[in-house]
Image (cartoon, rainbow, N blue to C red; front, top):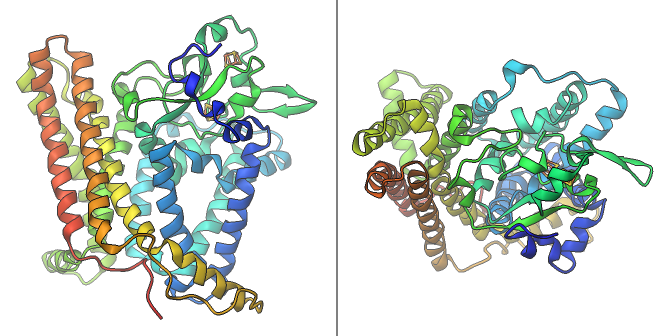
Length: 479
Ligand code: SF4
Ligand code: SF4
């Protein structure tokens, strides 16, 4: 049955993990511990000390969760959507509200999600979310309410597909991941009359949903919109779905018609979302280094304002919308002129923009990896302190001396390695995209060149950022 390359070595063949994934309650089992942690974050955020480095809401989401998310995307794929506790509310909402309406046609696509991402990144800086346990707790609680309301009112998986900024981060960066949920043998799908992976079916008297994101396995390709929920795997009566290994970034090299997604090269909204995330990786890191303050002061002087929120709004509109659009269009124009291609500029920009995703992912890895490696062990004293604050001094005096996972001298090397891996992934993707569309090798090389230069420029900007003195916010304060 396992005739698709990669499926033979899929995650399902691994001891223990394979058995766990096949277990029907695997997702719930993954969600419940994360739900418990989310509830602890909300409790400590509202009722614990409001000093972020000493509060679970200050360290768990911003330091541990983000670090583990990018490592999971690097090593496997979108495991954190699999374990998403907010989705537990979907089942509850659909028990209470029996009839869901379709998500409005005008809101299908990624434009709204891209706008919400810009809003999220702006509010992260403007409201200093990382420094405010109660705001973080409010955000987590709002997430539960939002997922409950949206998925209660609308059919499918609209919260994940069209709204959730975290989900979009996973979908886009999982383009570079080494695993995907896919069918083992498409011939079996072609002869399958039930298509239960999409429609769902009764299993042992209990309803097993099919893919609520509308990704029909026979034509599913890649990780866009796939939450790794495993519903398809459990719904398929032919045991024909697996989690297959693949070459990282390889789904960017070709542009097949993807179930539920279409062709990436025709999805300007998805390309815009990808660009927002690529440039956000750099802007988010820029917000962490010392020169950002001088730049903000300069911008405030230029605007004659002392409102930081306004300065940041301009910075984020330019940095996440105007600059990415201009650079992508400029690269597309140069690529078209050099290769003699005849396509419209927007079509070229859309097709090639995805090649920058690995570069952005490398920067996210470098940035979030830095925080994780410098502060992962802070969870020990913060948890000790939270338990003690609840009147239960079971775990002794908090070990405030704990923090880093690796010696400080390793950090820059690890960050630069992630960044350069990202650059390599982008160069390969750009080259393969050009080669897939231009049969003439010489023209393909010319088409590739401007995108390679853009990726290289981004990696140099990333290296400069990594070499700047860090504002140590979000990491542990001794004491
Ligand atoms: S139910 Fe299984 S065999 Fe049928 S189309 Fe879906 S994945 Fe293929
Ligand atoms: S294809 Fe659909 S059902 Fe299968 S894991 Fe992805 S989101 Fe879930």
